[in-house]
Amino acid sequence: MRANLDRELWRSGALVGGVDEAGRGALAGPVVAAAVVMPRDSLLAGVNDSKLLTPSARARLDREIRERALTWSVGLAGPRVIDRVNILNAALEAMARAIRRLAPRPDVVLVDGPHAPRVDINCRPVVGGDRLSYNVACASILAKVHRDRLMARIDRRCPVYGFVRNKGYGTGEHLRALGSNGPSPFHRMSYAPVRECRV
Image (spheres, rainbow, N blue to C red):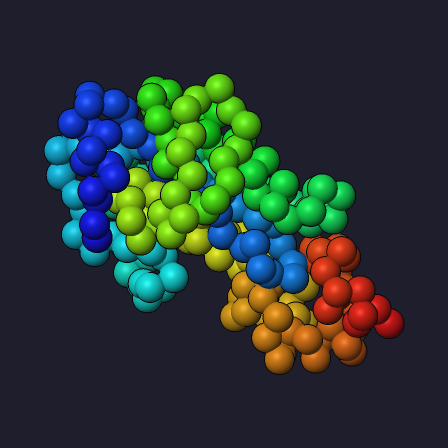
């Protein structure tokens, strides 16, 4: 894991945070953001973009990140918020909620992607940040693991869609279940595959 962005800011004495989201492309469930401030003295081995890690590695690192972090937080925006304001604005709002809960407050937050949430903390958008920043990669792991656990809980309420396996993304199994059963209260009605599968 390269941490050049973090190290540059650490050398200036800044308290550095990272924020990332999970679930932007899913058809169901919330978009979840995590924000984290990791200590500068040691980097956890194995931290990387959460999409490049196995589920078992993510679970292990999620636990280690939460134990070692100076502060961490999670924010989310549910399907109705996504339908009302669109997924980009919902993801930014989830990020803002996570950042506002951090204590101590970081001096700067590195944000995965080209957009930054509106908060009263200096935020720096970094395209590909989950592969370029240690703090952002840690945040990506927290967001992914938290959202996967939420989708497993939702699956127990609506097992027909296979959320525990597809996490709300548009797999063949999920789309077939939508075609047969229509959408659940957890689906994003503004997404075309969901609108088109109403029964």
